[in-house]
Structure formats: structure tokens, C-alpha cells
Image 1 (cartoon, rainbow, N blue to C red):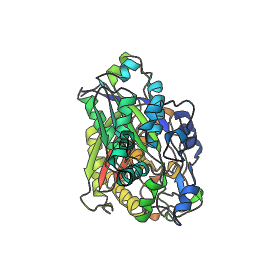
Image 2 (tube, helix red, strand yellow):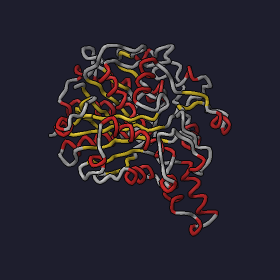
Image 3 (cartoon, rainbow, N blue to C red):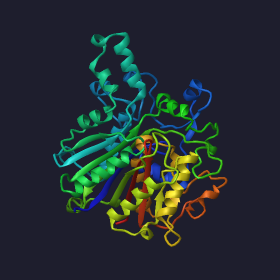
Image 4 (cartoon, rainbow, N blue to C red):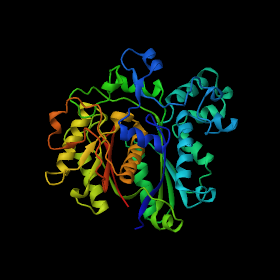
Length: 418
């Protein structure tokens, strides 16, 4: 099969709105979590979010939205946009520039786009409300589009004139990891030369508050105390929004055009827990199988993995299940360094897999392993797992990125330095 490499990255995130800013935040341990006044005003429990700086969506009217001047839209384009599509256009443009793709390569039958988003709960609510109160005849077509769960996919394929394969994925917090693995397979099979992989979410109370009802979110008011993956005092995750874009490319195609390469996508694995609608299998069996399948697909032994970006969201059930999975796959003679960068970024839901795969690419390219910040008292259950409580300047050669979603969806991705 064809080899697959990553030739471009783009970020709009709580820890930076471009590749350089994200890299600096990871190296300095700078968190993007902060007190969110509009969220706190709507409830008495959840107050923190991984806010996206420089973007503001005060009303549903796109003409009231503000974002960096470098991001340009026509009035017609804005009418069908949702906040996470605005983030994604900015991240896509950075990734395209970073990969040095011209317009003919972007809009080619050999270039596709796989994206992941839960849509905009805020604008879906308003679209349904309009249909019910004003009536279908008085509800505009753009309003209906903003309410669709695949609105991100619709907007990106139109904006960038995508001619190749395009699909929107939705498997909860494993969504953009599923998108990346599936995009990798298309290139391996020779069906596409280039694939954009996009993960994105809004950072709006309507996206956040349902998780508070599930008692999954931290109730802390101090950003220094949440989220705390693998800490004995963790009390839930903190949600973030934004977008991350990776450009996957056939290795020979990339070499022929002289493209720079961040990493090679060596392989991936996926599995299902078959256990519960929300809770993970406490044994970690499903994630362990996904990691083992990723190693098999990559033709690697467990001892080859130097660094793992854990899914760990700072819920007790999720962290403990992942620790169990890690101990199953990685024994005493093969203990990679492990960290959850969600301590800095927050949990991006559908965005998480793409964001963390992008972080792994930066770690491989720049030669460091990011820390699991905010740990005050490491959970004793971490014994036997090498949790990074401070940044390591040791250059990893092979990295693994794990994602798990509600319904027991598990994905493990493996990337290597070039």
C-alpha cells in the first residue's frame, strides 16, 4: 500500500490560532482554559471553557460576528456559516499555505476532505425554533443549512471547491480520529492523493451545558485546577472549541512536489466497547484492542512507541479505563511516556482527535514530548504508566494518539518521525 505523510497543519484553538502559537503553548505549558462569563451566567455549576481567542459570536446574525482580519468571507458565504465552520476556514487556509498547495491541487478530483463536527447546537435550536414559530415558508434556506448536523461539511466543500471524496463523521469524541484513519486508508489504496482531515466544534454554552447534565464537567472556577487528567483530585473535563486541520498526502506525491513532511501516518486501529451508551468499559478492553490493532497495522511492536497522547479527559471512569488499557498493551519492558494535553487545551469533543494528532506531529517534528500539566497528586492507579508531569526534550520517533467516545468508540493512531 502507499505510504501516507502529513504535509500541512492548521490550528484555531484555545492555546493558539496558528501552528507557531500552539507549539509555543505546548512547550511553555500555557493553558487555554479560562472563566467564561456567559456560561457561568446560564448555570450555577460549570464556569470554565477552553475559549477561542480573537473570535466572537454575540448573536446569530453573522454580520455581528468578529474574527481575525486574515479570515475573509462574502456576505453570501456567511449566511450559511456556523461558528466552527468559521474556525475551520481559518485553519484550512493555514494548512493549505503550510503544505504549499496551489488552487489546482486543492480543487482536484484526487483531493478529498473528511471532517468531524457535532454541528452547532445553538444554531440548530434557532433553526427549529424558526420553523415552529415563524413557519417553514418564512424560514430561509440558509437558516436551515446552519441547523444541519453536517453544516461544516457543506460549507467547507463549497468554500474550497473540493472535488474528491468528502464525508462528515460523527462518532462523538472519536469522530476526527475516525476521519483521519479513514482518510489514511483512501490514500493507501490509491483512491486519493491528498486528503484534508478537519475536526471542529463550537465553544458555546449550548454545546457545553448538556455535558453538565451528565455530571461529566468540572465544577472548578480556577483554571489552574481544571481539567486535571490523571490527578487524584480530578472532577471532570472542560470543553473547548476551535478547529484543527491536517493535510494527509501520498508520500511519493509529496516527494515529487518537494513538500516538507511533519510525520508519517504508520497505521491505525479502531474498536467498540460494546458496553454502555455513555460509560467506558472499566477494563479498558476496547481501547486496548484498538491500540493493538494500530500496532499490527503499523507493523510495530509495543516497544517502538515512545510517546502516547492519551485521550484522558479527567473523568475518573475514563482515566481509569485508559490506564487499564495502557497496562494491558504496554508491559514493563515497553513503557512509553504518556500525557494528556487536554489539561492545556480542554476537551474538543469531535475536534479532539485531529487536534491531538496535530500535536503529535509537532512533537515528532520539533523533538519534544508535551507534559500532562496541572497534576498536583498523581493518581496511584498510574503506577506502571510513565505519566509526563513536565515537558521532555527527548525527541520521540513514534507517537500514538488515542481517542474514545460515548458509545464505546475507540481509535488509536500511530505517527512516526521522518
